[in-house]
Amino acid sequence: MNPLRVNLRIACLLFIGLSGGCQNSFMPGPEAENSYAYEQNTRLGRGVNIGNALEAPVEGQWGVRIKPEYLVQIRQAGFNSIRLPVRWDAHALTYPPYTIDTVFIHRVDEILAQAMKLGLRVIINMHHYDAMVMNPGAEKNRFLALWRQIAEHYATYTDWLYFELLNEPCCNITSEEWNTLVSEAITVIRDARAERTLIVGLTNGGGTDGLGALHLPRGVANIIVTFHYYSPFVFTHQGAEWIPGAESWKNVTWEGTAVERDRITEDFQRTAFFALEQHLPVNLGEYGAYGKAPYDSRVTWTKTVTTEALRQGMSMHYWEFCAGFGLYDTISGSFRKELMDAVLK
Ligand code: BGC
Image (cartoon, rainbow, N blue to C red; front, side):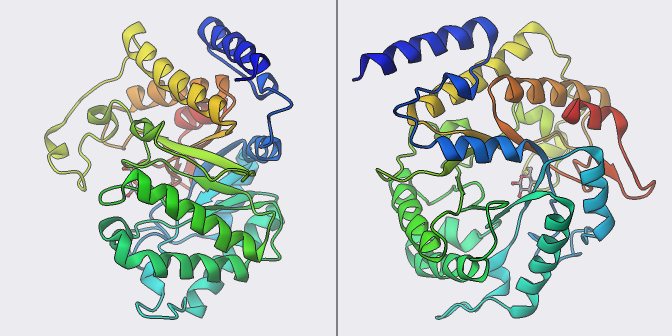
């Protein structure tokens, strides 16, 4: 191993330990072949997921239909980007050539056009592709065919549009399979546009558990790694109707004690260290606490996580805009101030 790299790593680790942060400028120059991805990650900055909309089986079915004014409000509040979860597989043929429904893709086009006009960068992903995570072998051709169509359709869209391969790879997708799928998807997408910045998640559900298992193909750059953070889960998901057993988790607070904070700091340092070794910039693609958690605790936790992500030079996307975790209250037509400050200040 190159001694320069070793020294830089030690310096960086010390830096992480002492100050809690290792900024991109600490990346070893000569080996930082992924430097464009760091720039692209910095441009993502702070953002929000527009969740429960296009990843519902049909937009509106989960209570959110994206209105142009939402994007305006997001931009005016100071966000740099949005993550747009999309359930492509619900709008495509289940047999070859797996054609994506034209009306649906035009709806995505419409939102992208609004975002671009406002100067918001956008990540589109593949979300809630349940068949894929349950049966990756059988679904692989369809997964790649969907990406081929998306990549070709958006081939002329420049660096403000990012693709994230799959939300929270989990269940029956092994790390080995995921590494192969990532490599194949990169080839398919970059056939359509070689410069596309790609975002890759971690197996085992997208959290820090999957760190270390991701092996990207050699010589491939312009990749950002993403992870999701919802720890402690009994706090962030208390009362969540879609999590078995969570309805009995009630009034769990998060006070921001030294022990609680240290736990978060350690998780973020571990993630930053893994990424540093791999020359990968990091996106925190989802973090948030459900609306049934005590509001003050949600604010304290969110502020703590935002601060950790910033210290580690990560881009971040709060989960989510106006549904159960919402930053924005559609009834009053305004943001929840304390939560917004926890994300943006
Ligand atoms: C899921 C959402 C869920 C959120 C928090 C997301 O990845 O798609 O359905 O609300 O995580 O659990």
